[in-house]
Image 1 (tube, rainbow, N blue to C red):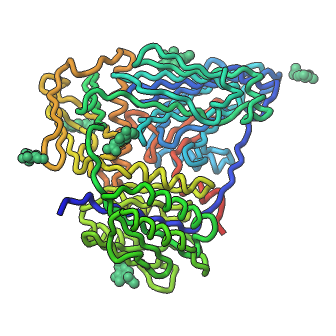
Image 2: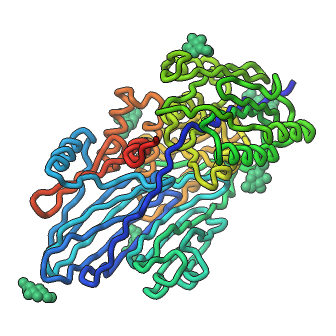
Image 3: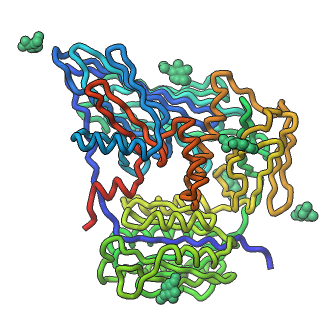
Length: 595
Ligand SMILES: *[C@@H]1O[C@H](CO)[C@@H](O)[C@H](O)[C@H]1NC(C)=O
Ligand SMILES: *[C@@H]1O[C@H](CO)[C@@H](O)[C@H](O)[C@H]1NC(C)=O
Ligand SMILES: *[C@@H]1O[C@H](CO)[C@@H](O)[C@H](O)[C@H]1NC(C)=O
Ligand SMILES: *[C@@H]1O[C@H](CO)[C@@H](O)[C@H](O)[C@H]1NC(C)=O
Ligand SMILES: *[C@@H]1O[C@H](CO)[C@@H](O)[C@H](O)[C@H]1NC(C)=O
Ligand SMILES: CC(=O)N[C@H]1CO[C@H](CO)[C@@H](O)[C@@H]1O
């Protein structure tokens, strides 16, 4: 028998969801407070995006006035700089260990100041806001910098820029060697009415620029505009050309980055088990959207895939006792089954009570046993023991993916379980497009091309994650590290899959693309960003060594991460504000209680 690609389990965990309606606060326009310049400047160098938002505001009143600065930044980004300048003095944000900043935060709160600066707003953005009292006839400049590594999904990178109603001017400069294969601009601001505000300039295949300069008139006349001006997202979407299957290597100042995304490979057939919650908490839209998504996903399976369906409420039902081949006949039968899935009536699970589940697999067979959590009469279990038993059942043989719906789901639990088992967890937002979110996630993992990829680097140290259980079509493997003694002569790379060398590159200086002097630090920052992200994602991130290392790098590179905060001291009365990276749970629970 042929080797099957490992079973992939998709847990669809729709547990009661908190709707939260978000009213975006508008900066009220006032002829006496003049935002005379608002500039968003984003530079992307080999997928590493550094964005600077600069706002210049004048107080034209003869008395002092509180002036607000409020912007939205991508969740995936780390803030790395904030400063405000007024009356000739500059006040810089200082990145400190979170606990240290917490003290200043608590003191400010106890004085009745609104001390928090960042909150979570939606699926993809965080809200950053601050204000400062500006003297009569004075000006203030706010400058915020954030950094992120763009992740390739479904064959493209996406840079998201959000504009609030304050006369935005957006410049995006992208440089990618060996070249950009396509570039397009989408999003709420890429509309017909604003068409003439946007231009794309192609300098050559490696350098492109997108500008968005709406006139004052355009800012009030478009569909997405209020009387205060336009607001919405601009999405810059692109991909790069990949002339070499062994990937693209860049180095500067003693650091390297390796982008690996081969396409000349056959897909691997896969096994997939869908576990679908049909308990009472799924009633209404959620179960309808799940059915829609499942029908579409089943339609996307190919003939050599094997699949299974399991539904549960308080009991577990297998569609078939074993995985079946995705033949047309079996798929039709499965679709009939899916169409019959109904959310059970019955009571909703109160609080964050969560169905906890234990799954055991045998080859081509999936069996799940569900454990009801503490609040239920059926017995108490602790998440650690469930995580441990799932891990021992899987034994690293295949990745586990968990999808959590809404915010009442114990997402951290799902995430930890997925990470421990080489998978990922995704939060699905209950919204009109929940079925599309589900499908999108499945598409990302639908075409495995490589398994057990090991990237080896000779003459390198402090290398980021270098082994990957799977590589999917449309994604990209990125590895960065330090070059020992900054010596390219000894630097070598090879990519090994299934203990069998498939790509080998002994790199010479010629293979490295030139990096301009002004960009020479970006690979080092990219390395630091990736290292911190991966350390924070590790399921053992609470372990002291991992934490320490992530903290050290966050402080060194001035990243606002879950371990650090930025303290901003404002001109008057030694007022301080603190920027924490919010966790989604915290901010949502604060905003809207569930029941
Ligand atoms: C935008 O940022 C780039 C890179 O930092 C810089 O070279 C350029 O001058 C900036 N543009 C403006 C208009 O500030
Ligand atoms: C400020 O301006 C208002 C009218 O614009 C005026 O009535 C007031 O006297 C001015 N105050 C000072 C201190 O100049
Ligand atoms: C991978 O995706 C690209 C387009 O995104 C497609 O052209 C190609 O056929 C896919 N490869 C496989 C093996 O499915
Ligand atoms: C890089 O690796 C060396 C040893 O190979 C170690 O001494 C050093 O602390 C590491 N640096 C970082 C930032 O982790
Ligand atoms: C690599 O795989 C090929 C066939 O796919 C096999 O002939 C060869 O012996 C393998 N090499 C090693 C080192 O395992
Ligand atoms: C009913 C059921 O499956 N209960 C199990 C819940 O989980 C604990 C520990 O993980 C098991 O010991 C129980 O048998």
